[in-house]
Amino acid sequence: MKSILIAVVLDLLIGDPYSFPHPVKLMGKIIYLEEKSARRIFKTKEGLKLAGLIIALLNILLAVLVPFLLLNVIKGYGILYGIIDIYIIYTCISARCLHKEAMKVYHAFGKGIEEARNRLSYIVGRDTKNLTEEEIIRADIETVAENTADGVVAPLFYIMLFGASGGLMYKMVNTMDSMLGYKNEKYIDLGFFPAKIDDVFNYIPARITGVLMCLSSIFRFDTKTGFKIMIRDRKNHKSPNAAFPEGAVAGLLNIQLGGNNYYFGKIVEKPTIGDRTKRIEIDDIKKTIEIMYSAEFLLLLLYGIIYIF
Image (tube, rainbow, N blue to C red):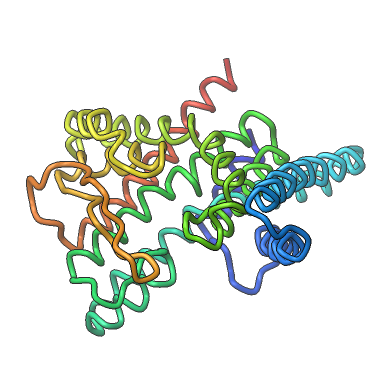
């Protein structure tokens, strides 16, 4: 419990400095090399699917074993063990980084809509060059909402269950999905299993995230509507999980998320999430960040109570 709390505080204070050594950067390089090798060896759709499964299983094993063995080797060295354990856990949590990137979009509006579109393009997969102001804000809010599950609650969930190894295991799964899990022609086969595995790993955390968002927003936002929209619109997303945190935020703020977007020059039709009770405003970005933090703190509080008793 102490390691988790220190790691969360570190994340809140310094986030993820770009120059700082980070396991996810190494994961990205490994996955990149694996993809190149897989495409050289496997030439058929079935072969690429098999390659994706092999990559996923090997990487999960690697992500679990390396920290597990390292921490066991240094277990007798109390201070060193504590430092490494905290460091690994800290690198798995992305609340401060998510906050920072979302606010870059918020502040970019002060330099004009083109700058806001450009800044948004760094954190979303959709095409941003023709987005309106409201569409930019919506995309930023959706990113914070979905990544509250992927970048905050889910890694903490697996850390609480399995320690630092659980956190790195989840980050590997999530990184594979972000690099290979696209549904376009290039990745539909190689990314099939990485995407499915990511769906499985996020199934419980996504639902917990939505509940935490609603419960932690009592007396602050519209908790009743948050639960209502989360349940009602839980299937209104191509992901089996993303609609839970997005639905909770849409209901809590009485706004509408989702809808059609362009990806790689092609329109992707999506249902909406929530009711357009009020127009999306730029300050809804700040409110969504507040919801992210309140969900994280409630999770820590509940875990602390369970840990003590």
